[in-house]
Length: 229
Image (tube, rainbow, N blue to C red; front, side):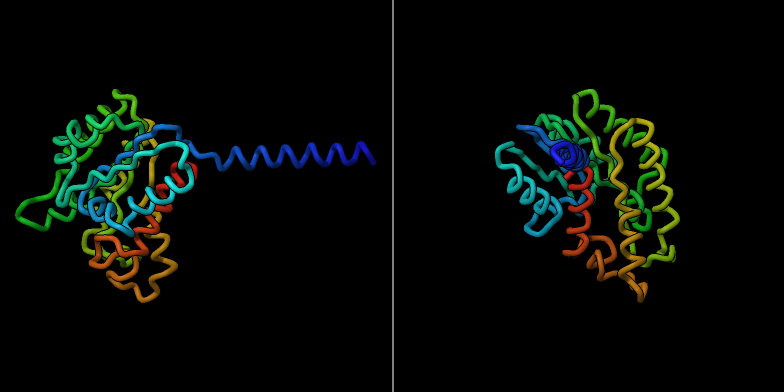
């Protein structure tokens, strides 16, 4: 009986250690996290936005770490814009972790006189941004662009182009060995289950692009998952 109890407690202790290891956050004391992106990230810094949700969640959960969480989104930005302001808005703040959430305007603006970003320029820009961050010792998380239209069956006008750009982001993340946060796949999966009418907007976005409260919660959840939280 004594042996049985001892073995049982040993087993339970091992299970507890394994579960703790599986759910362990990667965050460390003094971490400075920057979210680099466009208007989606700029709005995400407002109350209820995905950056604000991540900030509120992590600072409440880990007050002892003294985390700093900074939104660096600028409306209308594309990959070349991020590259131009990388030093001022990111590197000068000496971040330890950076999330890059970009690609919507690179595709969407192809419909406008201002123009989008050619796919080769998009890829080269992502590689240069990530390279500079890695040189500075930053842990990088690259997000795929989400949606331009919420129809989940591939019938949004820019779906084929957006898929190509998302594929580039996935390849860059793999090549440069940074963490991929596949927001596009997360959105499509969610919309397949929660958009039975195949509406163009109103589920995860309010205008087919910018995040609704539900969209902000979904993105925040994917970010927290990437942080092991």
